[in-house]
Amino acid sequence: MSSGEETTSPSATGPGAGRRVLVTGASRGIGRAAMQRLREDGWRPVGLARTVPDDIAPGEQYLAVDMTDADSLRDTLAGLLRDGPFHGLVNNAAMSPVTSLEDCSLQDMDDAIRLNLLAPLLCTQAVVPGMRAARAGRIVNISSRAGLGKVNRTAYSATKAGIVGMTRTWALELAGDGISVNAIAPGPVLTELFRAASPPGHPRTVALMDAVPLQRAAEPSELAHFIAFLLDDRSGFMTGQTLYVDGGLTVSAVKL
Image (cartoon, rainbow, N blue to C red; front, side):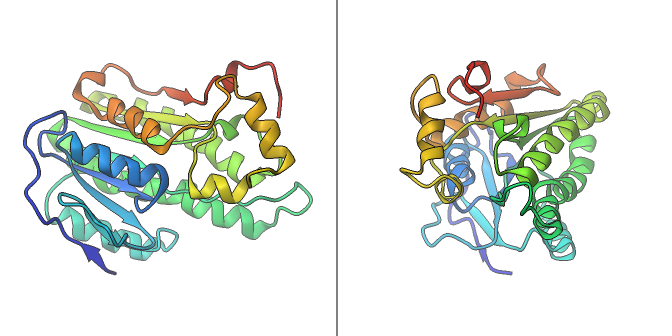
């Protein structure tokens, strides 16, 4: 395991007020944008990812871990918690096998379940005791509009629908401790994962962009804004909800 350590003291002002927040899948895409935004908001963001970025900013901390390895993930989380509790958790790490129904293998399903469902479970189980002790906390799970159904995404859709169910269940279990749990379900976002699954110019990618009422994909920074919103103390009366940030796809009549 390698790490990038904080190089400056975080700000004690802003919505984060110097508190720690754990972000998974933090080295690129939505996770990296969230790390940057949360640092700007005064949080002390700690990122987990398979690899550590080369350009870590002051105030960011990264640890490299294979989140599909339950034992390694538990060890990493235990080490982090020795430095104190987390006020926030962003379960963002995910993978998206692209296969037809006929070609979807048990290995595809197992891989997606390990990263998209089991890793969030382990991270949440690790941080909740500290949140319960503080009687405060914010958990944000990143789902996907694909959880409502998407061609050639059996494993991804199943697990992203599953994280919504987990979100609702955790919200009910943790509400009495002052902990909110919400999900964000993005539509197309210009991340490495999206570009790999939806190559520019591919007929299905073109059809998707044509179907988005806003006629574009989101930037990762736009998703980071909604993550910051849900982590904010002023969002505490919202729990168990799924926020669709998809350019209008969920209200579009077009079915993909």
